[in-house]
Length: 496
Image (cartoon, rainbow, N blue to C red; front, side, top):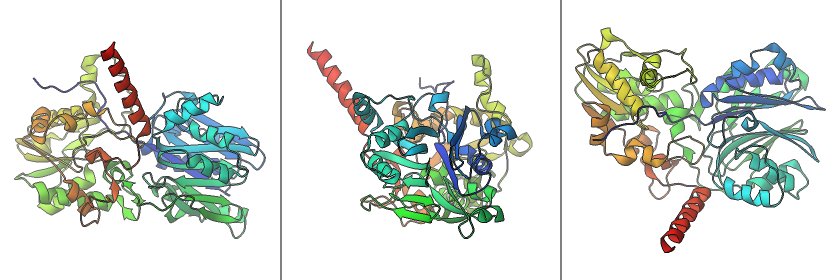
């Protein structure tokens, strides 16, 4: 009999957030505010590095932004008009303090702090090479590779050393870095991970350096409003932006390539009020919901989102189908990720800590339940159980992404492929496993149409959609090397 695991985590976890400011009073406070707006991208740890013109200062800690930077004394201990910050969800390395970013090092040219969002797919190969050269690693995160590559570079300027490092790494990344002379932002050549440039418009920032004002680099536009900054533009794929007292300078050291922005930013990761690559996320998710209704409409009474990520898509589904939109499930926002689950019985009930049925809405109804994705399927099944126990007559689940059949190696913490429900079962089997009357996903072509494309260009896809297709646009070097070594060991064992 096919069964689902009961206790494993069942989410695609957010990546990380990066934020940096240049030339503004209270840089640490603004960075903390920016990181708070980006808290959805990482909840395990956070950190800030500042520069006061002479010295660098740093505070890093496990937990949320408010837990670490809610104390005015902590902010006061981070003086300076320049800062970089980071929120972390671990995709590589354990959740321990030495892995918390920004990472900082003292070089011959001065201090250097770096915060990185993404994943380097050749980090293990580079690490082995660096260790052989005598480099001593202080963390287990792939981000430290940047520090050592910069340290051994023979170039003279910070920017040239960083370019030298970036030309050796393979993977998806957005990073912000702070040196004695500049705030630096960079995106990988395909632009898989987001990074935007903003301008601080407050009178305080402008008075510090007349005619210049302050500048912001951030993962998403939602971080700009909270610090009083205006959106300027997206940092381009393969671009390095250098911000100093002379202004903003652009360096493009890589040959131009076709961008492959992560399509899951539109589906789930970005905050709904952000604008990514020129597209408002909220509107994109509603359009996906409309497409979902056109492709897989079903006779029903109400449309119910799985909160909170399913809300915009459910609104779009409701608008297209003409079915009433109802909050049939209520989410408890006061349950943290670290809630104690001491026994199997309590762990089994864990989903009810976050989601409760609105019985008055669900009883006797044919329900279209809209969510953003199905990973392992455990949470989906428990939510369906909650809806049925509340008296729903039928439950039809609709998913605003195609089936997730492959793992991500570019900065999203997904399970191994054999643990992904869609990698092991077809849609009919999945429907039976999670206990719904019907199940449908938006098609890959429908997703592209909802995002303003005429369809997916199979020869040159417009987005990174490897989690749906298995077509990885950036070589997954470490994974291929590991597979080769495993095959080699198996061959040795078979010949013995």
